[in-house]
Image (tube, rainbow, N blue to C red; front, side, top):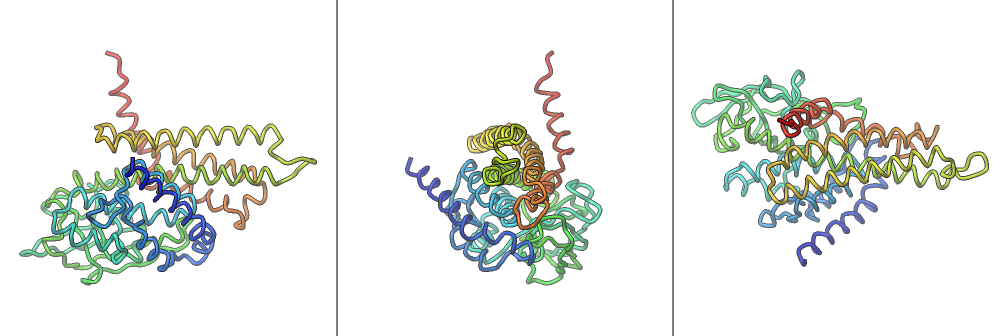
Length: 379
């Protein structure tokens, strides 16, 4: 009970932090295209960049369910800030916790927890999405050194990252490496003109004869896809599942608040039956979404073998409802919903991204369908 109380206190503090240090400035972050270094530093100081890490690695030790609640609080306030948690903590951090050796964990996890090293996941390429087996970035080995060449694209936090978890193809198969920016051979270029994620420092990354020592290979040569990529994407989808819920809740709160203040035809608009219908549907969707996320979290906590598919289902569902609720929130706001002085305009754009990243909704449908064809077949 003491441990649960400690974790609940962390979430309550994160909620207050998000309300005072993130949400009021989310529009400014997007306008400038920068997630301020001071904010990242303060988050690191509170342990937020390692919220799900074990305490032995300077983490907060949140269990999967409470890490989900934590992600929701940050994600409601700002999707770009949540994006930092998704790639740094969930994708890279969890992959290293699962597959890095003791020396690698000691070298990178604590600096990541303290915010001294920001990490990103370099998988997607200009012509390749999450199909890691088709990547074109290559490596070759000479002695105890690997040389990496290729380009990655759509890399969240890639413009400010110090560590790159890079997936490359070579004679030994698909392999995952930790590439350190300060060792040279890494060039990043910020991608501008994005629909959303404007403060997520999304970049194209070029590796040109980038030298990586053999001790930076994660798990083993050829184990990049089966082990590292699958683990990273699973944890990324869990983070996105809660991120979708976060946007849906934020959109619902925005439309409810607006409807209680805005008057049309001589009365507050929430009194109109059609507006009540929209709100009723939104509330139902977020309650269902939270139930799916919590179920996935509980299964992850207990080590249930079906946790991965439940996570996929949760990610698919909440990314869909985030878009649906955001559309309705814009509608309730009328013309104001199309104006960037109201948060629903930003939420609407951010919600669309969740149907694409960490596997599109169509990819999730195929995975869920394959599961359903096995699980629900009556012999």
